[in-house]
Length: 238
Image 1 (cartoon, helix red, strand yellow):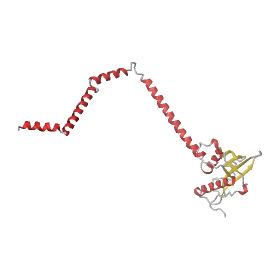
Image 2: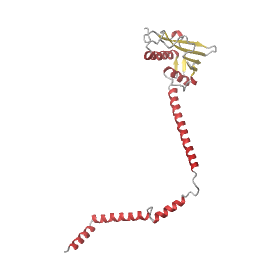
Image 3: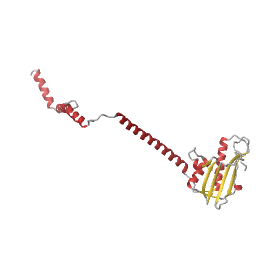
Image 4: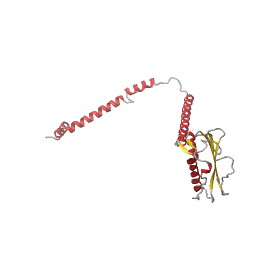
């Protein structure tokens, strides 16, 4: 048997095998796919005709007015900036209102409320004041000439000359009015709290009063000025 006959036999045997058949099938598929891609590709006759047709369909017959496009773009940017600013303001206001308006007690005794004020001053005094001597606050509970109306006024004061507070001030630090158990006015030092709500954050006792004013919490009058412990120094008498 000659060499050519031997090679021909091996090739014929391989092509008849499963492996050979798979190789042929794979190669044929690749060739067909390549031909299809070439025939339908962008640079084929078919592809060129499709490109030409699409170009005609999308043709803009008039010149593009670039200034108009620029104006439209600026309007889009303006709307987006306005939306971003509005969204930021809304989120800040919502966060602020959530902080200020919740939670508030449904009702509270006046004695308990004043005790919370004393504790507030005491904590602040102990953490921030290095003065010696006894610190106190001044309180005034006064009925109005009109039945059902009464006021509570609070001043901070101290016995030490180094204190920044004075008992001789005519304007109280806190002033709130109550009518039939509900707070109807509230002022902090510099003025009406409704005009102060976005000037700065409210903390501690002031924040509590603001919450109560907004929630219309009931204040139960159960004490007089003489019943209230006004000392908030670190060294309280037993």
